[in-house]
Image (cartoon, rainbow, N blue to C red; front, side):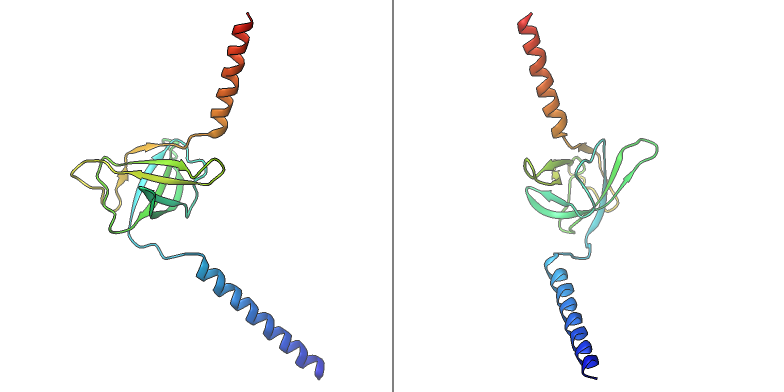
Length: 154
């Protein structure tokens, strides 16, 4: 009987620790239900962007990436983003995929335009700039340097 009581007590302690871990993870995750309105943007490349990535305007988080899809007709990546309700973007605003640093993650940066008309819920950001591939830039630099070296030795 002593063993069963000890096993029950240990099981209760494990459950309490598990509940504490779940509550702690939820409270520190900064997860919030998406409120605001949704807009879309189409990109050639979206390297490094994923669901839940930040959408920033002037460096301030104003939304999140809700979903990503591939358009089967144009083969462009369609990004669905949710913006806070107080963020009103002019129609000629642009979106670009930017790196947080050399080894950091990527986020979607919004650059507001100057148009009088605004992008409403369900609208599309037409002007986009795809992610720059660091590997491609390094490769171009290396091969360009190699070509110059070969030309100078001739």
